[in-house]
Length: 211
Image: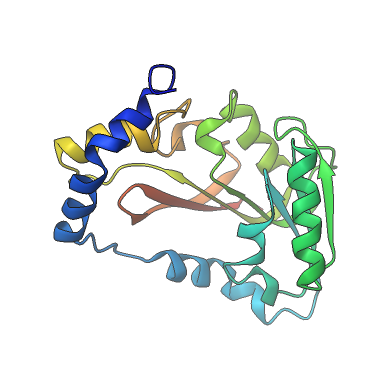
């Protein structure tokens, strides 16, 4: 196992040093994970009109169930390539009494008409897509004009030490197809693109589709 997946060997060696180093350095983001989400959702929280929200590569629905999305007056749709994850997601949303349409679908070929959703999100999948450009293009295509997108994934912070860089590259993000936030791949239909480093190795990107 350690030969075929060397990240586990690296983790065994540097897990404790990394934990100590991160504690000592005490990274302080300009905007926190929760504040970015609060700002992103603010305009929708008091809306009388029911909005439509899409979560792409939703997995078991954990991200959709958190971050304040359940406080919206919304119809929820989630897509994933794994039928097992969809079953778990349906179970979770059923427990939360938040009816959600779970659909088996490819993020690069979403089965929705253009400009369907007010909000489109993706948590932890963009950097691992085989074709991130197409996935982002689809995410924007199905979002309404004036609607918003948010995606979260891995990126190391600017002042990372050599040991943190080694950990990020060889353990934390070792299976990624791209590194960092792919702003250069975002469609031209977006504006107000903001990238926030919310943790040492995690960013959130938010944007709005032009009217």
